[in-house]
Image 1 (tube, rainbow, N blue to C red):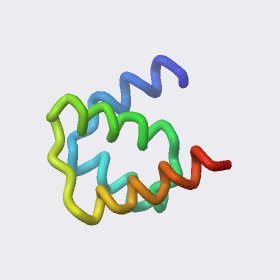
Image 2: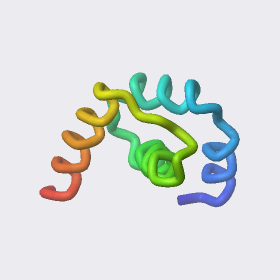
Image 3: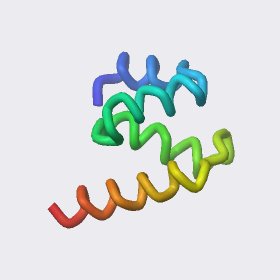
Length: 64
């Protein structure tokens, strides 16, 4: 990932990040990576919807 894009993603608020994920239908790997980092750091509390979507996407991307 481009360092400029990574910095841009880090500057997004949690709401902006979740909106962008929904707009991309949870298909953008860079957004997913940032979301995953925030979940593990505790900077974002995921909802049941987002947990389920993340599980589905993670399964599809790893099995491909």
